[in-house]
Image (cartoon, rainbow, N blue to C red):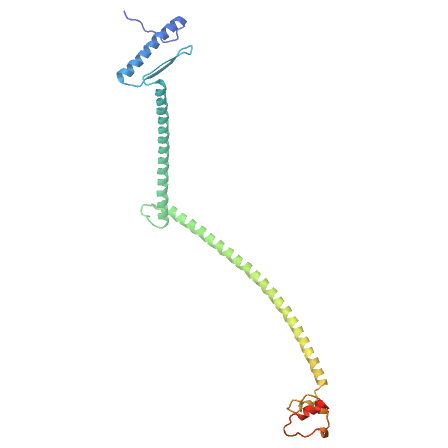
Length: 242
């Protein structure tokens, strides 16, 4: 008659629990060793007792197996993360590509191209979009023209003010010029009168063409000696001698 099935639960008896732990631990270590030898597998086994005692087995070294395990887990997580990120980017690219195609088709429709596939409702919507865009363009053009006209008016007013200032300066300069001309004319009249009051004697203009230096003009005619041959300018010398 076979052994009955043992109920899996914590053994309350401390001694029985310790005996069961020792037996099953040895069996587990044996099975791990057999698995590594028979199947050429890298096996690592770590057991901590209730008292904190460590039991381990490693076919290629427990630390080496644990490092390999960590590397494998992290690589798997990184691979999964990269896969998820790649999938997200792929979905984003697909959305952007679809949106770009839609915008390109709408642009061609606004230019009056590829209108064949559109139905009446889509054509009416396209017509409303064109009317709205045309109205906004006209409003913007009108606003720009009004701004330019206002700027031109400002420049016109500034130029008018500048013209007035220049005109005032010109008038002031003309009045001062007329005053100066009047003073010049009065000075000329006064000088002319003085010149008329003291005229030059007419006898001074009737002088001899020869150059005479000295006081011989005051010598009486009878004192002038006639020229002798070989002697020149005797009157000049006599005049100085007298």
